Image (cartoon, rainbow over the protein chains, first blue to last red):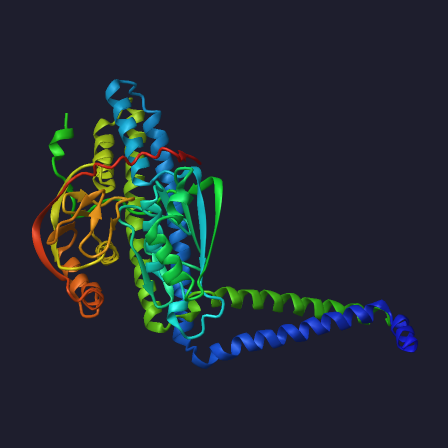
Length: 249
Length: 224
């Protein structure tokens, strides 16, 4: 035994380092091949291109969202610093700020809860062990009923026109592709968590859906939760204010 | 020379190692979502994301024009009241603060159905591009939930009688088509709630009231 240790001690340190590195290398090559293997079998070139396109479009969307938020910020500043200090302008600016906050175009921070909802650890072939858009919608509805005043999922603000839908195992909210895990952030009263967890329909969600299928739900109650602004289109094409002339001078 | 070789070997091995670690991490990141979808599902994701991008481009262009108009007005020493009013009217209509009218659909719901079923219907309306929705006389805004079991539905603390109406503004064809297509939301609800009857009527003119809900947060503060 001591002979082996002595021989090891006699090895130059670079040889030990090299052996270690080679060992990790071998492991990584094996892992890489194992990860590629099953996918290559059904991956067509077309699918690869489609994934690339989807990722590119989502990146474009992120850029457009950032640009829109920036422009809306400029708009708010310009409106506020307008030369007219007359009452009409001040009144309009106050109404604009109110409408932006009410609609979710302004980022909010306040006390609340952040949930994290994840697929079952070993989803297998059972579709029910994956988080669906419906699971997220029900969680959001429960939060509203418990008194939440602003909610977002992975940074997408829930607004009056927000839809959440499944496409295969992917979830789209506000037409943005959301990568799992799903983080639902909510701002609300101090007793938001108590109200939520004593609601019969929330208990039904946990006991009838989340627990039986092994979905993982965790949460944190925080003093300051940030719910981002909605970065999407608000111009309506079909809906017209009922009485547009009422606002005219 | 003898001391140089191991260094070279070590450098090369470390380099390859680094490349592989990155490749491994990347392939795992790609695996987390989109890689699980088939070609048809990916095409749908692309269509959805693309449609929103088009909407975002139009919105960015519109806000750019607003910003320019305001800058010009400031340069002339004017306060651009008309631009502010137009901005306000569009915002309030979208946010549910004012009553709106337009083409759309009315949906008659009768029989035993749960609040979750109605919420599925509302989600599908939004997915089909509904710009404003009301359940009976209640404008649907963030925080509005139709809840309760069959026979005991409520919205905003108001009970819904059997045979109530949902109204939505949007393209009547797209709204009707999306709701009533084979395997669509109404077909699915027919399976979950066989006693419910849901009928959709396209209309040229639908009126939707303003919300009575207070949408100004009492706990959250605007933040940057």
